[in-house]
Amino acid sequence: MSKLLTLIFSVSLLCFSANVIADDKLEQFPKRVFYPQLDYIDTQELAIGLKENKFDVIDVRDATSFKALHVKSATNIFVKSESFEKEILDFVAKSNKPLVVYCNGISCSKSYIASSKMKEIFANNKITKTVRTYDSGINAIAYAHNDMVLKNGKDVSKDNPLIAMDKIKKHTLSPAEFENYIAENNADDYAILDIRERNERIIFKIFMFQNEKKIALNKKEKMIAFLNKVKQDNKTLMVYDVAGRQIFGLYELLKITGIKKWHYLEGGEFGYSKYSLRAAGL
Image 1: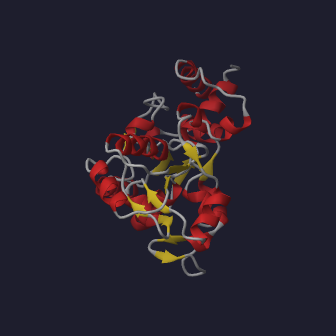
Image 2: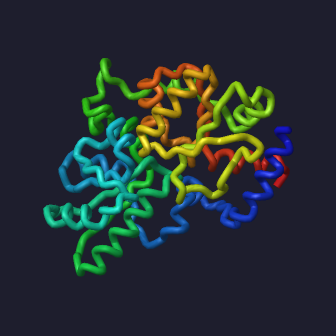
């Protein structure tokens, strides 16, 4: 069954994967090829700028992810909010510094989409404003400079640590392991949860022979209700996202609901696509 899953996924993916890129920089940041007009900033430059108070920082993720972990000076303006343009214009009216936009990182689309929207908004309103895109994302700056972030609204400390990666690793499965778990276990014993945003999906449904629940992290009440039902039914939660980068926001909800049996797909959809192509010999 697992070979069939990978083969079907691979054939579907080929329809969308003409952009398999060999260049090292684009391999590390695969979505930059779609946004060549943006001005990118790396972790070192951002950290120096934050220390010197040179930037106004905008976190364009949902409120749940922002609360779980964010840059201390960041303002949360969700890119999918209907009031995004108004909030950006209100923010810029009070800002006299270059803007830095970030989301979860690497394969997350939000920072790219938000930066592009902001440049268009500023052009339409004849506003001269520098917009930098930090596509390494919140995890990168958090682990490189944990004094620059807040976790659940508090400084990172021994009493409020960043997620211990050794604990996360115990719940993280490689694409092959994740696929084998689904293929080898009774579907009544687990629940598959897709936390990708709709506009971030390349393949609509990865595990096409299985029932999946699709709930984005910003749908907090709906997410908690679903997680509580999974716990009540004593099922194992199988979770995936775009690139394996939304663990912070998700982990906080797992703690709230007390779920102990869960597995997270390493690399998300992006990692699974690479595995599927290799497994199919493509």
